Length: 120
Image (cartoon, rainbow, N blue to C red; front, side, top):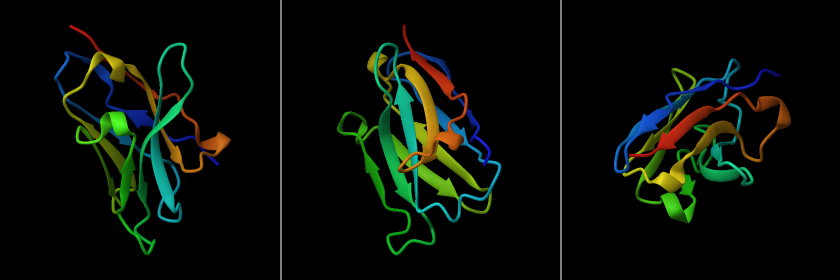
């Protein structure tokens, strides 16, 4: 199994937006639920949101951490085998390294993550 590769992070001012991408080496079609996670300095990694597989009876269903509801949107492009995290109205407390993984997470899928810093 090969780790996922996250990209799209950066430095953004409060209120700004970023779009993160997750491009696994293998197919994600068979993974029932994909998730975006984040880990802020000194804190445990947490699940930000998830999206069900296109092959699932609940295809495309999403769920989010309360603190990001209405601001973050997860989507998937099965043709491109990619998961996205659109983040709007970013706040300083969103600063973290963001990762994608299956849900539940598998240790072999953890990649390097992508750093998101929200600061003025």
